[in-house]
Amino acid sequence: MKEISVLGLGYIGLPTASILATNGFVVHGVDVSQPVVDIINKGGIHIEEPGLKTLVQAAVNSGNLKAYSQPQMADVYILAVPTPITEDKKADLSYVGAVARAIVPLLKKGDLVILESTSPPGTTQDFLCPILAESGLTLGVDLLVAHCPERVLPGKIIKELIQNIRIIGGLTPQSAEQAREIYATFVEGDIHLTDVTTAEMVKIMENTFRDVNIALANELAQIAPQLSINAWEVIRFANLHPRVNIHTPGPGVGGHCISVDPWFVVEKFPETAQLIAQARHINDAMPEYTYQLLLDTIKDIPNPKVTLLGVTYKPDVDDVREAPSLKILELLQRNPSIEVAIYDPHVKHFEYELSGLEAAFKNSDCVLLAVDHAEFRFINPRQVASVVRHPNVIDTRNALSRKDWQEAGFNYRLLGEDATSQVRMAQPESVTFFEDRLFSTV
Ligand code: SAJ
Image 1 (spheres, rainbow, N blue to C red):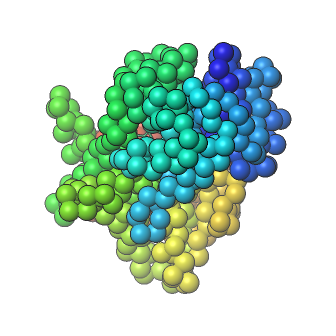
Image 2: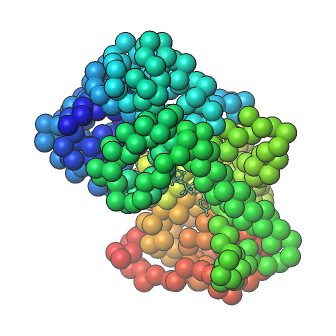
C-alpha cells in the first residue's frame, strides 16, 4: 500500500487525509501551523464540519494518520493548500509554490503529485510542473502529475468527498490513471479522466456558473422592489419551469470559492470574460445594497443600535472567510453614530466583539439577519419585541416568518421586495414559540 503525504490540513486536506487513513493508507498530514498539527495528533479538529471529529479520531486512532509540520517522504503527494486572490483580484499561488518547492527534495522515480487546490487554468502545467521539474525527474514519465480539484460543499464535505463524481486531469494518461487508483479506494461517484487544464477549468466553471446565477438573482432582487413585487416569489414560480433554476438573492456571495474562483478566469481573459466579471461586481455590491437598506430603515432614529444576526459566509458553518457580513461591518464602522451588536452561535473567534443573544437584542433599533443559520428561525419575535427599542427587522435571506415577526409588532423588510409590498407566498412557515423564551424549543 502506498504512503501518502497530504500537504495542507484545512477544510479539504484534513478530511481527505483522514478518509485515506481510514481506508488503509499510511498518511502523513502536513501543515505549517504547529497548533493545528498538535490538535490533530490528539484526535481533535480546528475547524467545524459535521462528522469530521469522529473521522479524524478514527484516522488517528487507527495509527495511519499522523500530522507533521514538515513535509514527509511518501509515494503520493496531495497538495491541498489555499489559492486565494490578492486585493487586486489576482490568483495568489504562493502556497502552492511553497509546498511544491518543499517536496522537490523528497521526490523519487515513480511518485505521483496531485494538485487538489482550485487553480487558474494553466497552473498545473505552467506553474507547478516547472517547480517539480527541479527534482530532475522526467515529468509525466518518472514523476506523475495530476490535478484532481476538490468539489465538496462545506457542511457536507465528508458525504460529498465519498459520493461526488471526481474529475481527474493527468499530465499524461498514466498520471491520470495512477491518481484514479488512489481516489477509487474511497470515491463512490464516477471518476472521469481528462487533461490537467480541462480539469482546472471544469472546477472553475462550476463555481462561476453558481456565481453568475446568484448574480442574476441579486439583480432581480434590486429590480423587483421597483416593480412593487417580490423577487422570491418570481424565483419560486420561474423555477417551476422544468428548465429553470434561478438561485437565491442575499447580502452578497462569500466564502473562499465562489467569490474567488471566477476571478481566475477574469485575470487571464479580461477582454473576453465580460459576463463573469459583471456577475462578480453585482455580487460584490450586495453588502453595500444591504447597508443602504439598513440606513433607510434607521434613518430617523438618533444614535441607533443595530443587531447583526450571522457573520459566517453561509448558514450553519463557522467559516467567516469573505463573508458579506464583514463588508457590512466595515461600512458600519465608518458611521460612528451607529452601535452594532453581533450574534452568531457558530462563531467563537471573530475580529469584532460578539454578544450573547439577549444582549444583542437589548435596546436594538433594527435587527439585520445576514445569514440564514437554522437556529435563527426559532428566535421568538415576541420576546425580541419586548427588549428592543424599535421593532425593525431586515431579512436578507427570506429566513424569518413575516407573519410571526409582524404579529409581534415588527416592521419586517425583506431584501428583494419593496418595503410596502405585500408578499403572498414563498415564506417560511410560522413556528410555535414559548412566551418566556427567546428560542422556541423545536
Ligand atoms: N449563495 C447565495 N445564493 C444562493 C446560493 C449561495 O447568495 O442561491 C451564497 C452563500 O450564501 C455564500 C456563497 O453564495 O455566501 C457561496 O456558498 P455556496 O454554498 O454556494 O458554495 P460554497 O462556496 O460553500 O461551495 C462551493 C460549491 N460549489 C458549487 O456548488 C458549484 C462546492 O461544491 C465547491 O467544492 C466549493 O465551492 C469549493 O471549494 O470550490
